[in-house]
Length: 288
Image (cartoon, rainbow, N blue to C red; front, top):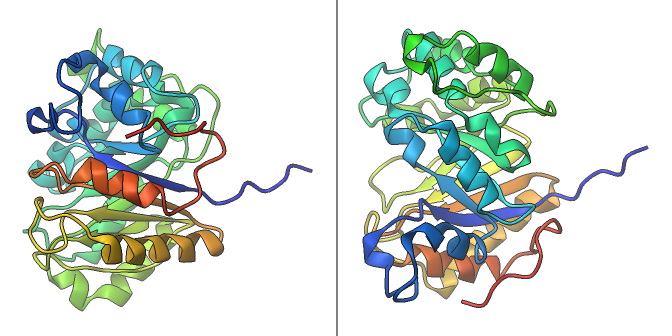
């Protein structure tokens, strides 16, 4: 009988390629090509957000996989073409293209998939139920979906399932109607096994702290100023308590800092990592 794996806290940053971080977080003279490895040695996960803006190439996914330590995990942000342009409607081909772009090539380093909805998209249970029902639940399901990609992906696709494993999905919402319909939204997510993202946005968007899946997901955009302000010791202690509550309940906890403007994100992430157990699959952290 296989022993049950202990729940893990995975903590990191949302993206890693920021010019303003050079000379502040990244040492002066560090090659841009080495920034991911430098950040990954100090984080336990990174939220990969380039996939939100455009479809990536298979070679990029493979490079990110091979440029990070064994046991590392990426969260992957789903494309805005699905969430913001198509607004979750008629998304079969865009979803197929996304999964055909090489995301499955991350292999064991593929963590949760994040779907961030636009502030103008209100709670629509029928639309959301249909969208969540289209999301693949396993690597095999994703590979089967990717096989239906359109002609734009010819010659630039890669979607071998590899060793099959479940896929996790998390949804971040920004329209106030989700707060008003929190109970219905939570029930809908739970029915699909998707996590509700707990988003700290300095009061700009709703903060829903719902437990709807076997894992928890938080995005920390800034406590007082969106994308800019940092987290002091008391705030970090509160988020550590939030994570421990999920770990104690057997749920993995993923937390990503997106307060990048003033170069607070990587330092806040490292400070939170120091407050929580490090995943066993990773070796000791590099020095700051």
